[in-house]
Amino acid sequence: MSSKDKILDDVARVAGGAVNVFSGLQKQVREEVKTHIEDIAARMDLVPREDLERVEAMVIEARVQQEEQNKKIEALEKKLAKIKT
Image 1 (cartoon, helix red, strand yellow):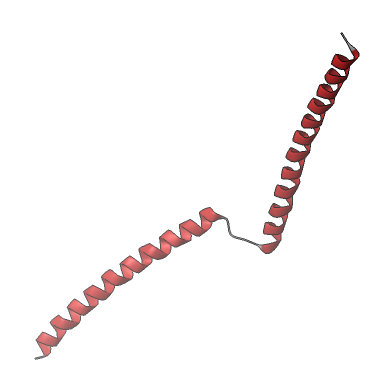
Image 2 (spheres, one colour):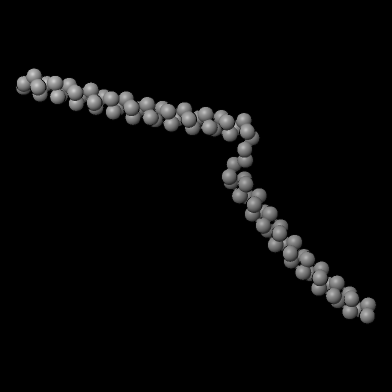
């Protein structure tokens, strides 16, 4: 093996090691950022999406029921008006 081949092998090994280091560093940075964001969210007292969606569904159902009740009240008021006349 010539010295040129040895140098290329060394460069390849160093480059491969650098890729591994950067890959590990990227994972570590992602975890740190995720942890930091979760920390901020906890301090801000944010509501989880699942809770928000449940409340939203309850509000929609309440709105539908309210509209149905309003229609029934209108019908009863019409009947009452006819009885009075």
